[in-house]
Length: 267
Image (tube, rainbow, N blue to C red; front, side):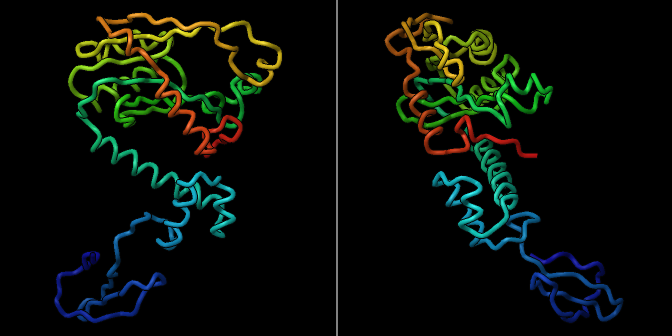
């Protein structure tokens, strides 16, 4: 790719190279200069493509950001910038290409983590809504294990609506959806998917949390589980969230930045 010259004359000559090694040209008649450059695959980042590939491989293998920076001998901020750049491109790719997928059985769940500090501390210190507890909503197809939609945000009605809207965009046809007892799902599923789904809910009944469980920010032990039909006539035998919960556990185990004690704010 060549950047278009600033003039329309056809008498040009080479005029050295810039600091990146790109060929420069000069018009012999008006003296204007321009550069013959290559597409910037990494935007404004100046690291080598081979080094960028190595950084991404470490991150995909579950290596932490700081360990990746040490192993590749780059700044931690460089690793984060590359992660944000490629992650954003992957997200746009999925939104453009993962749509209208024919599915049969969808399970949804949320993965908890926190940004900078837990919600209780964030409120005590008045740090604002950008930090504290956050959730990654996930939806997988039970039979193929394909993650058809995901959304990151607070665990509230607004973000549940955004997640269900993404799920409606990514899927096609009529299918069954299973969720836990999180109340915002009841209205969001009807609003965005109600014309083509059967919705079943798996309600977990928890006991009283112990002092140790409260200290560790962990839920109490599950005493019982019951299934309920939330919308239309779901097949109660298929109401299940075990597959998506198992997948979310894989995320937390494999990608250490999804671990609750390792999530940090990135400005």
